[in-house]
Length: 422
Image 1 (tube, rainbow, N blue to C red):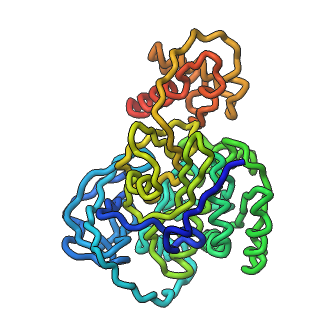
Image 2: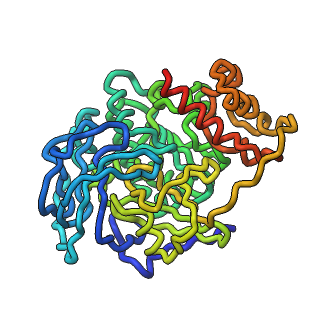
Image 3: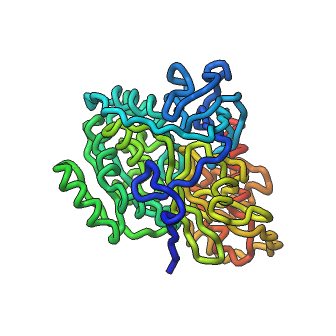
């Protein structure tokens, strides 16, 4: 049984219900995009900025206006790494020693239309782009042009770290409110996918909201069941190509953190100033559930939790996906689960013994060993034959391989090469 440590005794309560907030670092690097678009540094304000104030005078090309999580001084724009591995420009803010209290504002009127949802989320700095919530703003923008049948709030755990469970325990009402607001704006039904332990909390919040168009679906937390491609197929039988937006199949998908941010922005007019995090220390059975200001570095998170930062590797998202990020990567709307452990030497692989374990274990039934061969031969036609476009990069094939072959790394590299050559 994993031991969960919530550092509420050491830190004060923040804007995430039930999560203790880490102290502010001396410097914040607030992302200005989600890593998919670029912007000009001249679009960013200069000088003193207060907590909750916009960092730009207008919506940026990314579809949102970033807001400052703290009072401080904007000193420039630099490129940073997000927790998805992407690069993005960020406003560098020197945080003031004294953080004045901010008077809560009255919730703004909201008419419930999709255009109003986009405007409210944009002005609140709300964005999400991670495996369990593919580009939220892009999903909503696409929904302006095509009908959406279902809004799915995916509350399954991506890798066993109980982040969604903690969000539901502390803020089930906000999570449900955010999902229902999206469903109303899209004239769609709402589905909440939960495991048995969190079923009652979510069901009670739905009853309180009197949402007759909402449905509960109970599923076990079986990895990689939380992946959008797998989950949409399980729920509807529709095939979503990995890496594509769920709206292509008439579905808008959010996870617990995204739903909560939407609920706080729409219902309470709160900006996304902090994000919830789950940090797992590999080998000692501890998972820290905390919140941190948008723009906080992984290094500051680990130092605040007294986790050594020397000779370690940090993996973002589900650990089997092997997405390593640097200590200077910043938290925002990207991945929020982190696995921290010592650096290990990759084992020398043995020759493939044609056992077929990778094929049998693959949730999308492609041929990982064949794709490794295609990568070694740089044969894109062979890669398509073995199903490269069906790979969700879950990493199960590498995990089960008795020869310790670098299957995921080879597939990921070949997939990126094929995308850039298109």
